Image 1 (cartoon, rainbow, N blue to C red):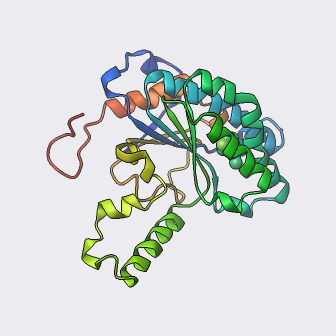
Image 2: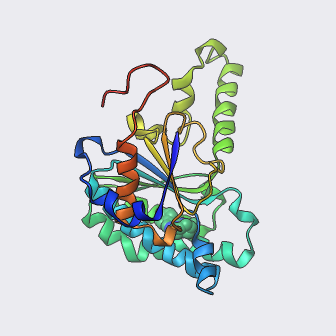
Image 3: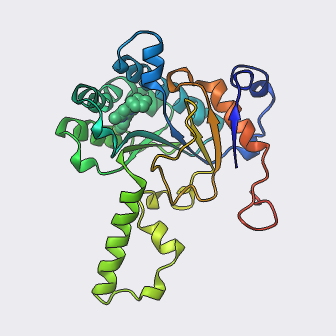
Length: 261
Ligand code: V07
């Protein structure tokens, strides 16, 4: 089930109530929507919103890490985003480069490891280079995983997994009956996150109530929290409010008893 946080909840009292530190969602995924709208409301170009959005990524990544989140997955660029104006796409492709040059030392200081999921081989070479550098420079970090979905699409991810399984069946390496939930999960781009592969909490900013092809398989049992705040306005308090909302819910995995954590 989902809920909509109102302005009081994101700016005030709820976040000040103590969070239960034993029930921090281990994996939070965020659809970072509303950068363009944030800019347009200020009569700024859309790219100014993306730039501010990148600063929010830094703030929220540090806040999540301090709260004890184990994986933070951020939808940075979807396979559909190529349809945007060329200048905007070109700007977006530079953001990982900017991000790397300004934030990697801070990530290392906070023991945060960068991971990327998506069809990264289709990105410009300079973007791929920056991404690989960020991964390499944080490879030794043992704290939170900051997982960027870059040129990611949920259906394409499932199609890729099914192709792999079908090929193995064709080669006689696998029986159709061997294909189950776990085997499919093992072929998705989140497989290397092991027991943390499925988000506990999915947040979408900026008022849209859609999944937009994000982690379709992995969010099967996630709690959804929607907020009207645009991504550049989202901050530590907003994150705490969303986690507070998450903690108020009884989680049922299709069964009768709430999940024991
Ligand atoms: C992007 C900033 C956040 C708001 C939403 C869209 C714009 C961080 C990255 C990034 C990705 C990989 C990496 C390091 C940083 C990023 C894109 C857009 C394409 F290794 N923010 N951000 N990438 N935005």
